[in-house]
Image (tube, rainbow, N blue to C red):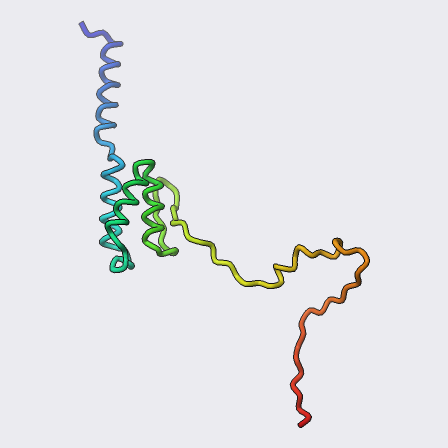
Amino acid sequence: MITKQNHLILLLFLQALLFFSCKESDAQFAEKLITRFEEKSINRDSIDWKVFREKVMERSKVSKELGIIAALTLNNNPHSSYYYQGKVLKGIYPQKTSNDSCNLMRPFKRKNFKDIGYINIPKLYAIPNTQN
């Protein structure tokens, strides 16, 4: 005889079974992701797709997000992003640094040298020699 409690347990079991059987696996997700990049990437002619596939599949085993980040990084387009579960994911690229020589001098603050006088010259212009 099926009691209300057994009926409820059976119903919850069936719901869980349906939920997990319909859920897309990480491997299926990675395959779709790779296919999308192969079809849509602006850099598709310069990408080694065998290496791309291996690395994205490897990272996707850990999580879908890491697979997406790997794909974006290997796509080598810093302007690309991927919207996944309410988050904007981007690839990992080296930071571009500017060559600012003034920033190199910042550690030498005035308080470091107590017995030295300073003159602040904001800009130095060269005056052309017109006496020839």
